[in-house]
Image 1: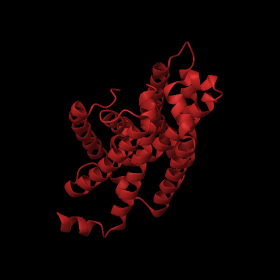
Image 2: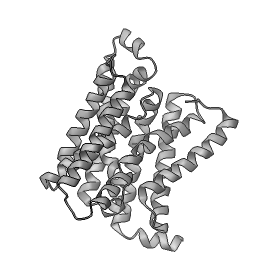
Image 3: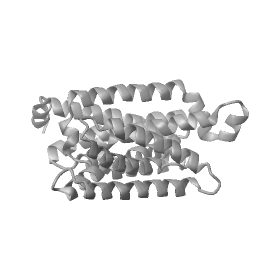
Image 4: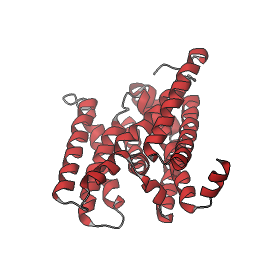
Length: 281
């Protein structure tokens, strides 16, 4: 097995996949803790469906880089989800359900009306559950992911105290002068960026797993926000690395393999948490 791994690591596409996979997993887990604690875990799922619809629209334009369309639409939807979720008539979970289901249906309709290939079912399945596209990344894709990951990490570190404040007690944060709406907006836009990046790796239906599993696993072991965040990042990075390696060696789907490893890690943390005693989210 070691010889096989050494052989595969000679190929650039394997190194690219590991770099992108680890960076995306790291970014998703950082914000995942905040989303889980704010009871807004499914925003990742909702935005992934929006990204699916945006991808279908981008397919009509024949652009070389469809992120030009997908990123702005997903970010705008993140803002709308935040604003609509604060409406007293439309609660957050209802807003996510409305936008995500609507975008998913419209995206599938567009793909059927204006097919970009003869295998529509295969295209849809690939987009929803991920594919080997992670193993066909170009240098430009890798640099795009690196730059956006650095920006996301920098924003999280710089505004860590503010994000911490609006996560635990938004009303108190407002009372102390913190512009909670601004930081909620920042969180939503960052999640939109992560969702778009993660589509290549795990597909639109499995993105929430990258956000939720590491955070919930870490909460079984630790109590403090900082410790949970660091642990979630470590778990997510290790699971992404292991998932990609297993996928390459066993020939299994990359996205599903990573999520399966995340599930195993959660079970392990759940059992360990019975003895350690972390938070119970």
